[in-house]
Image 1 (cartoon, rainbow, N blue to C red):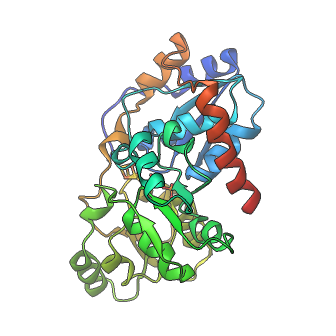
Image 2: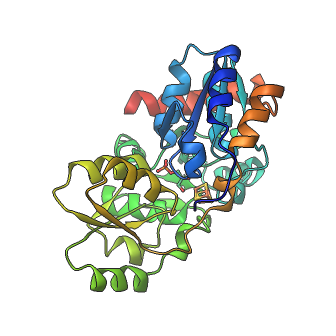
Length: 305
Ligand code: 13P
Ligand code: SF4
């Protein structure tokens, strides 16, 4: 994932101070982008940092729904994406109209939505969740008989198995994580018999079944630090390997599949971050009519966890 580039980190640091900006970076971003981060993290951590920051400007290096979530939580801040075309194909698999139709078909159901959804879809949810807390959020819904869970059918499958609740799911999935196949895990286990296997819950159920740990990206970073295992097979987007290696130089990390690349997560570069700081563009804003309803679903999640 290393590419030739002009190191602009000095200029970025200087301009960041002038603009009173912080740079938030998802764990899948290019190494050159991770290297200029004020904070790296998973979807939940980045939202929490966005909610707390005193900075006036947030440069968000991730995909569109993540920047929208930051904007929902801090409407008084300028949330800027270095490349506003970085979308999440899974989030785009359901829109507000489709969800409203599903809700009509199940009028008594409570609606849980993965954070990988647009702001418009979040506005239709009762409660939001992330890969870190999806099981805890669904478990907290004690009385609800019917639960709609959108958009990831594989995360829904994982949550259902761990909560013993039947979920009405949507036919969404992550095109990157489905590239990791059970054969990949079996092959890597054969090559590295001592290695632990950690995978993201967006993976296929047959892949999840072969894992020692099923974790969000930041929980993977935590597990890698804390485990006594010296070798780990990593079943998620390959960008995470850079951080894992940097944080744990004495350990070995093997990507389950080199094919697991999310092109949208590679759109931000140091050049684009510098432009974003110079021009203060492209801003991601959510109109109040949607923001206030979406905020309720996020706040309910934060109360639960
Ligand atoms: P995390 O919240 O685990 O970082 O996952 C976000 C994502 O988009 C996974 O594909
Ligand atoms: Fe979306 Fe998958 Fe990319 Fe994550 S890895 S941003 S879920 S497409």
